[in-house]
Image (cartoon, rainbow, N blue to C red; front, side, top):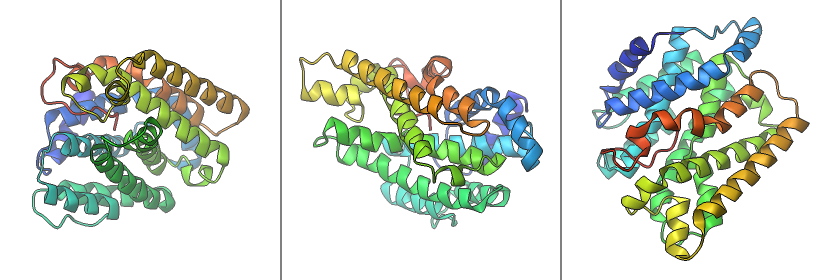
Length: 297
């Protein structure tokens, strides 16, 4: 696999064309992306005989890291106000439609979309990635706009989109030919996607609740429930919720047979809290300055 420092430099060079892009966005993308790719390396090798897409292809790896960095940056553009609202609207239109941004200072958006369009093994994945990005951006906005009046169910429904796991999985499929477009037609796969996204959101909120509480953010299940029900054992409740979603995921995965590398990929995403969040204190800990809400992507 491409050396970490070399990959980081590639992502940083691209990120310089995005207003508000920080070294942290590139570092977190490379760290998280490397964990995911290492977790599914054997599955990607199995698929490569059919697709001709090698797991160690530097162009594919860097494109994946850049997409993760883009998602981190978009998250912080919403949470931290890195760019002006009118700029964010133009950026969202660009990344969700694959067109150049109407404003200067965001050339990297079009560069990344053009790169993924050219690299797409299946054009259906590229079309779906644009749709997923549109949903992701809308969920980020809704997370703040609806913070005061949402129920827990509404929060989690929105949060499963703003965690961006669908984007991450679709990008992997696009680059390495994992046939996600076909798999989405299967109810069991869509169920798995909802479950792993809910697991990711709850893991993220539990892990980042100290930071979010200290910042008085409401876009976190722990903070939302504590504000609504001050005497509620919120952490225990959400830990039970997380355990339940995890059990349901394991049952579906045991009953269904998905092609490589989906089993190991879903397992990697479910374990990401222990394997990845712990190595990212700058983004998830309350004593860190300048970090946002902290979705994986």
